[in-house]
Image (tube, rainbow, N blue to C red; front, side, top):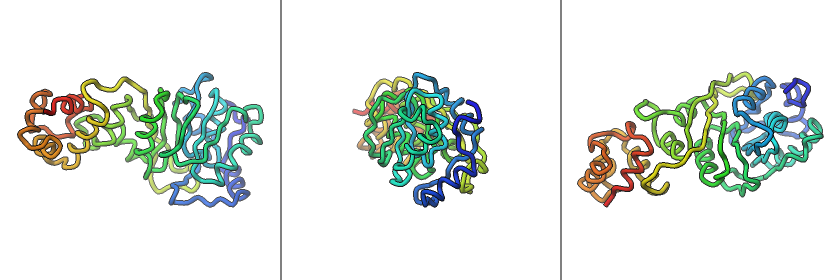
Length: 280
C-alpha cells in the first residue's frame, strides 16, 4: 500500500474531527489512530488478503478502515457513535472512491450487533474496558471468523495471550483459548493515537481452531469462572460450589487427571473441559 492510497494522517484526522464536531470521549474509549505506517503494519500483520471480508469494530474516523479496504474484498464496520457511523461512508467515498462499495457500516453496539456477510477476519482497535467481552462475544457469535488481530491496552494483550502457569493467565486467557490460538503480535506506541492515551497498546493475533472435546462451551466456562473466582484456593476448594461439594469436586478433578491441590492458573482450557465433563 503506497502513501497516496487515501490514508489519514494526523492533520487529516484533526480536520475531519473538527468538521464533524467530534471530540474524543473517554466514555467510548476513543483514541483515533492517525499514523499511516502503523495502519500498514496492522493490515500486513493481520495478513488480510483479497478474499477476506473484514469485521472492524470501532472504526472511528476511518483511518484503519481505509487501510483495510485497500487489501480486503470488503469491510463490515460496526460503530456505536452515531456521528462517526454516519460519516464513515462519506470519508471512504472521498478518500477511496473506487472501493467505497466494499464498505458496509453497521451503527450498533458490537456486543449486540447483528453481523451479516460472514466476515473472515476481525481487525479492531478496541477500548480497554470492552476489549475482552467484545472479542469473546464475536468469536462466539460470528463463527465465520477465522483470524483476528486486535489492538488493545498492553495489559489486556498480556491477559488474552497468557499461557497456563503465567502470572497473567486467567479467565480471559482460558476463554479466548477455547476459540483460538492467541499470541501477542507486537506493541503499538502511544504517539500514533489522538488523543495520546496514558497506557501502552499491544496487538493480539487470533487463529480459530476447533474447541476442546469433552464438554460444551457453557459447561467449560462455568468451571473456568469458578476456578478463578477464588484463584488462591486449590481447585478442590474453588470448585466445591460448582460441583456440589469439595468431595465431588475432587472426584471430578481426579477423573480428569488433575491434582485436587492444583490451582486454576496452571490448567489449560482443554483440561477445564475434561473437568466439566467429569462432574457427576
